[in-house]
Length: 148
Image: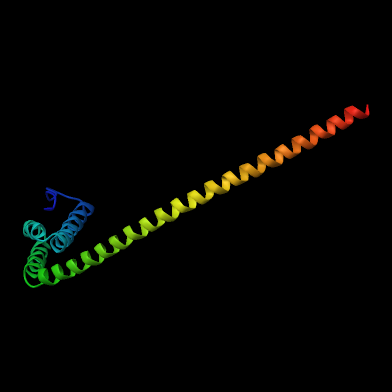
């Protein structure tokens, strides 16, 4: 999580800006990890510093230290409670989702049984209709043969 090695020598303005953005992004991500993951993120926050050769390094390091201090202070207790509430809601939704999935599976099985019965009925009606047609055609052929 520490920023990449700073550019040495004559770095372009784009490279310097990229390094600044990378440093800030890593600071934000370490704060997010600290909020969501607890101790691991706090360690990461302590590691994020930039070298003093940059004109903005002192301000950046002060912000990093302030964020780290704020997360170590009162915030973890509040966030821990919020994360527990969120986990509870997610668990409740997961249980509800499992119940809904079971209900859909049962309804699907019932629908499948009904559709199978319908298919059998349609096939039976088709075969009966074909049998009647064949009988009618055979009867017509016999009459026509008898007339000739």
